[in-house]
Amino acid sequence: MTVTAPVRTPPPAGAGPSLPERVETVARVAEAHAARTDREAAFPAEALAAMRETGLLGLLVPVEYGGLGGSVGDLADASIRIGRADMSTAMIFAMHCQQVAGVAGHAGPALRDTLLPEIAAGRCYLASVTTEAGKGGHLLSAEAGLTLAGEDDDLVIDRFAPIVTGGAHADGFLITLRSPGADSPTQVSLVHARRDQLDITESGDWQPLGMRASHSVALRLTGRVPGHHVVGEHGRFSRIATEVFGPLAHIGWSACWLGTASGALSRVLTLMRGAGRGRFDLGSELLLSRLSRARQRLDSVHALLRHTEQVFAGAADVSAPRVQLLLNALKITASEQCLAAVEDLVDAVGLRHGYLKDSPTRLEAALRDLRSAALNYHNDRLHLADGRLALLDPEVRLV
Amino acid sequence: MDPRFTELLTPFLKLLGNREITPETGLRDFGLDSMQSIELLFAIEDAFGVSLPDDDLNDTTFATAGSLWNVIRTAAPEPGTAAGAA
Image (cartoon, rainbow over the protein chains, first blue to last red):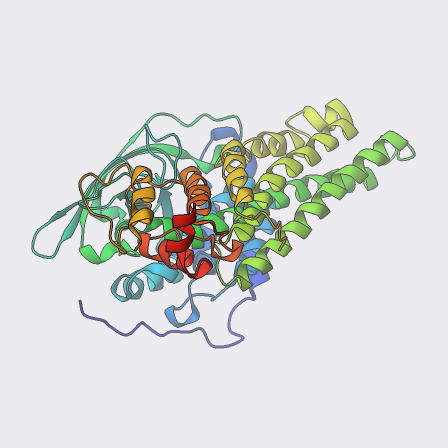
């Protein structure tokens, strides 16, 4: 394998819009189209275009590859802001960033040098293909196998995935498959394929309760990619899952959910202090208590999010049970408390502004979207994992 | 590696077939899942009369037979003696 030097085109310091400005642009575009993409269950194409143009797709691409060189904290900030506008768009963004971190951290030089500059330039939106029929959502196993072909050990892909968020719009995919010659379903490899390297058949319809703009369709992917498209070592996907995908999923998702609930609270308060003044009894102790409870939930999730993000950034071994427990606690807590906060708000403002689709509070959409949070890598599954992890830390050392 | 250790490990590696356990044998690859690693931990602690330090109960330790054995050996300087007494 020839190792070529990375394309070094760092943006000059101070050039272009600041990171918060880029995020703001994307959030505003997402907000402008949210009502339609929700109604039509359509992918937020305009917001993706804004992510490409602002360079935000390359948030986690290191600067030497032309990216923004952002941190996990930057990912959380951006996800919160975009989540305030539209949870589907925020989740699409956060999940793309999680894939990018996997490539940046674990791909070999040949793949990094070609793929990372493409992502930084806004030409490559990456989707994740980890779901598979028949394995019950187990991330760390795979049924469909990779086979090797040709002199260069090309990788032959034939994979069906029941749910691929943004799959119809992605420029490339990171796909889990059973490793070539695997002894067991837990020997899983992660492989990158560009859209033009695959034959893609889309099936089924996407008509969900919430998260309607995430456009998570079923795909059958077949094709052949060069051997160096494996990300990390063959059979060692579990390491990428533990060190990158799990942490960034939980931090990124939680930030999206916190953003959605924060946006909902903000719109309720804005209504109460503005156009709705006089229509709400702001002296009502019940109303005030409900606002308090919603705010308390969001501050708790935010504190846990920031703490987890810092522990992750400084952890010597992310696989240590106390670190994994914290990451899982963040996901479980955020998924429950952000939904509960919006429930509080629905109760606080009642039928007209809590339940009807056309209220400027958009609580109805926030409630539907946040209902999926517990299901996204199901909390039940995480509690099972946490029970086992708890047994591995009898001293109960909190980080 | 102590033969008592490989004997204890064998039933946890249901995909091992007729292969011999070597220090390089990947535990996850041959069928050890997260629930079973708890049971394996208890079995080791009983058989060798040791308590493995919490800090060692990570993915690196449970990666291969050799890495797990190293932690046991460090926790019990003379595991043969402890095993004999068990």
